[in-house]
Length: 241
Image (cartoon, rainbow, N blue to C red; front, side):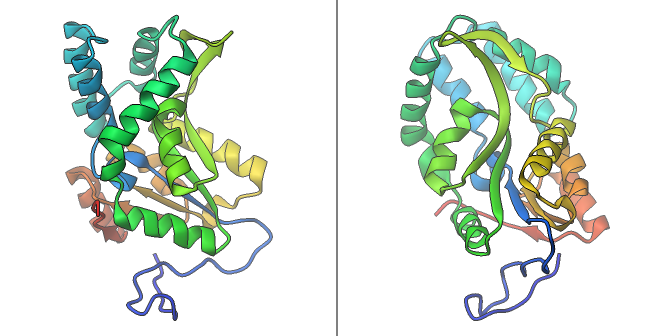
């Protein structure tokens, strides 16, 4: 990635805006271990356990899923389908309220300082800013609102008559599914992915890192760190304030 200096960035720490063109530049941001310095999935699992909303067997399965996801060894569609089934019949409004309360209490303090700054910088450049996460709209909306990120690409849970059906709308926004969501978004919003940015920590996001012209690796897992070194990608460390 090209790095340049400007008067608002005396240390040359911020990426230089892409050159002019007919299509727009976007900045896509992963959430866990990128905009957040924690895994929100594990935090939500702990909340569900403490409130008695997850069965012991499912809790163990979910812990295994989190580890396998980190290692990019997970059947993302199958696991998303199983997880969505647990919410069949739940009120969407009630879940939204519960997640917002949980976010304020357990997650907001974990927003990375550099993530806040980078989102604001891209907005100032006139770039299209979007969160691109495997999480659901329920879990990611509070963060998008906090960061004033206007677009959210995520795993969508099906809702009918205000109730969750227990199904998700394929593909899940994870792994190769992130590319599908990003390409649809780019086509709808006039975005040139070859000139756009993607920030993430996870090797499972390699398809999306290779799809954009400006991949940025943040707080990488070991496999992604090694791959970034081979590819010559810039690696950054982001932490909560």
